[in-house]
Image (cartoon, rainbow, N blue to C red):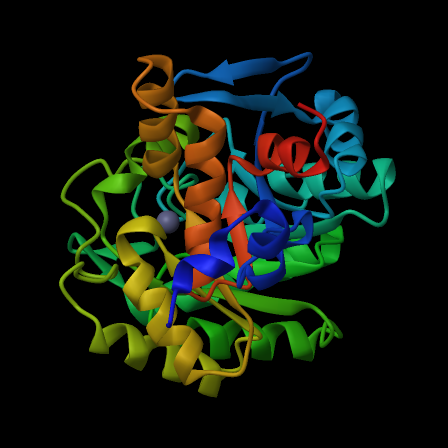
Length: 322
Ligand SMILES: [Zn+2]
């Protein structure tokens, strides 16, 4: 008799036949850096996640390293904003200083940087505005400048999240022309215009001042468009492609994984995190179990890399520390 339950009899056999195993090496932990001094302030919309001033990064980086997490992605919250987001490519900008500080604390910490303009522009859009429309090709020059400034500061990988056309090509050329041919690019290839970004926008103070981002981010209804975006990014030289958000887009992660031989990243975004935290706080779900199940499902869908605010707690659970 065929009885699939034989392979579920006890933990011994279940662990032998388990198809997907989470590992701390899967995670990239997002860090928010702010101007000022002596700041470690919990972000209201993201419980358990903090704003750090550059001088306060040391303990955090050491803790991350001790947990076995080897990669972070930096997001900057600048003090000054203008029409062209000039603090985004300033060598003394918040992210550039944070990169140098992290490398000073731990030269082996793999530093990824988010490359975009929305935190830095007065209008909150991800590029240069012309008649209230984000001008694609002019924005490419700025994005390239931002990526280059991150590389100069010591970043290991840049991750453009703007969704302009041809930005990977522009950035790759700029990096190569300046001797940074070994700096890799992780492209936010299929980034959807999602409602799951709400808590991040509050954390990064990056909500658009008018309108929305639907002229550059993707329509949540589209699958083939994700395939097209990934194909173009690969042609332009992306080393890693990303799907964002993760949970409502597990089918897209699988689609992308099946079509390419480059590593696939998924961004387990702020809204996904905040909803679980709220549900756990309300006593509706078992927090540890639901987080590990969520992360496992993202990996099972095809993600090789998971960017997640849960990274630290998941690392502790995987180590058996709590
Ligand atoms: Zn942006």
